[in-house]
Image (cartoon, rainbow, N blue to C red; front, side, top):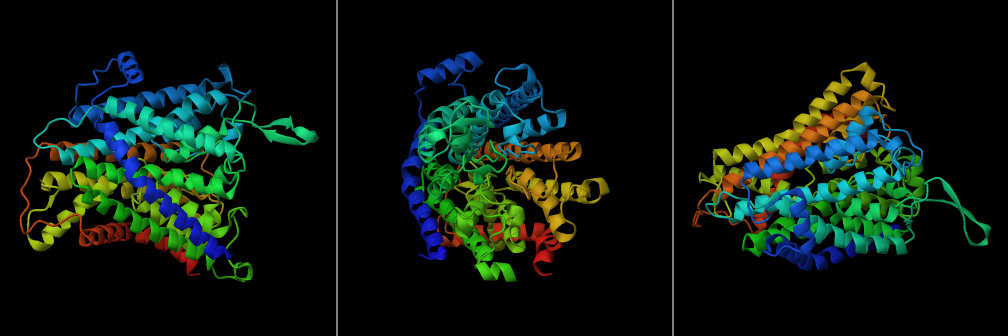
Length: 553
């Protein structure tokens, strides 16, 4: 079987598997977030944190809860790293430096998981398990909670509340993420990933006298990071390391876990708004963008010009030979189309145009299908912008799901969209304007610029992957990228919740002959077009200075 056919079957099987779980998982999440009964462990947690689970919050209270929980999480994780040398299970590692601890704390709390350090030689088991792994769960649950709050804003009529953040957080963690992660960890253990508390550098004698370096709670952390759309990894080589991604079929499982929840949430959305066709429209938009991204990236990596790539049939530099080009490109597309950031190949070694598409995937806002929760609310914001544009074209007041999109709503949507470009382009400009920061680039010229552009694109979109040629473990980059991660996460959340509150307060508008049907293929195509055009107009000049210039050389 040719590598091309193997790649087609690999992608096709993923599509089939995601289609099979879309309905049951989406329906299950609908019941989780809309059920009235609290489980016994949940009631214990509510008593401990002093929350009345049946009391709902307006958008302001919901936003304050998100920010308060995240701020406390940053402080806790920062302190845990700074005190590492005084805690047990530190493996003898010293305390983490202040700027790396700041960057890491913000990174994991914002569901970015950017790592400016080598995980197995910097963080002990206590920090890995009690700090980083916990945030892999709860940061994903925060994104899912915000998405559900926006959907409630669309579904409710003349209401002032969006639900209870603490209930949504606890249910998303205990009922959705934890059960799937337990099953996934067992599957990865069967595939050869390790799960123990040995030192990552400990030499173990195996049967027959063979010695192997083993150690670390890798299997559980691997499935947690993929399921919650988190980047990072126990080993610095991430999912290219055999302890984190052992075989071709574990590679398939990890990609499936990355896409599982984001592709199922549109079903939850359709159920909550009372029109399943709306959910099918959203998942169709995500699917079109995702399949296009995978096809383009795979094609560019397979058909790259040049003497050596043409001789071997593909651009193999930086690829793991266990996976080959198609599976590596599929992983790269999945991880940049979501907010995962895990990698099984070196994106810095991709072809110029292939590397450009990993950046372009993130520049889309990671909505195809995007992060756990973040992809859904990002796509719904783009749907709001699309109906506004369509309304202007025909001279009607735009409506989405029976809610008018007026000046207040479109301002929130516009501010949501503008946050990421401002952070990416400002951060890149500041870095390129300083000779000291340019010294962190491994390469000069367009590729060096691409390394910096990729870093700020990844941070502002809460992705976590990188063009590894950039030496980002410096005080300036740690602080600057940390700020991008924080603003790139929490400013959009505030605007989303404000939009949700504005929509929830409205009375429904009866559909008329001039109402744009938002479940038909016409609307699907319009959202795809608006998404691509907005991103192209915003980022094309920056891409022209980096990967486009490199590719046309």
